[in-house]
Image (cartoon, rainbow, N blue to C red; front, top):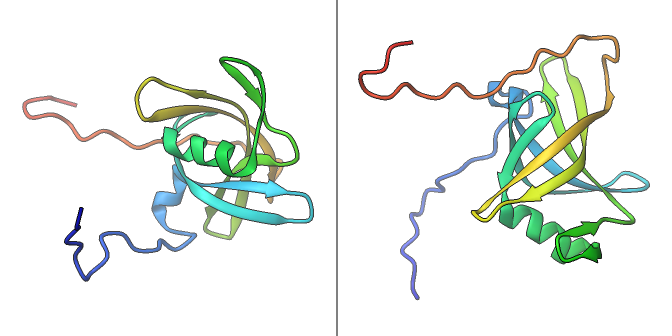
Length: 139
């Protein structure tokens, strides 16, 4: 199949301190010794919960491996899956993915815990995308 892709890219790199970084985070496979591989993005949808494309999770398992425990459960070994959040300052928050649930659709849910941050005593105020109101809806 031939694709007619435009000469101008539809996506462009976003600065690390862009306002979208409040809720759109980089998914990173992290090995010891600061070997980092950015594999996709995830969006915060509530406290300690993010959503990503299922194919991102499938790519991580296929590329970096996982030990299958049962038909519905696998455990990663030798690396960690992290979400990196960069805010103005710069302020860094690195979230560890503790559990991932692939869904029947092309999404996966990620349960997060704070791994490390540049401001350990700061109270975290969770932000997530605000849906655009539907026609006729009052907010």
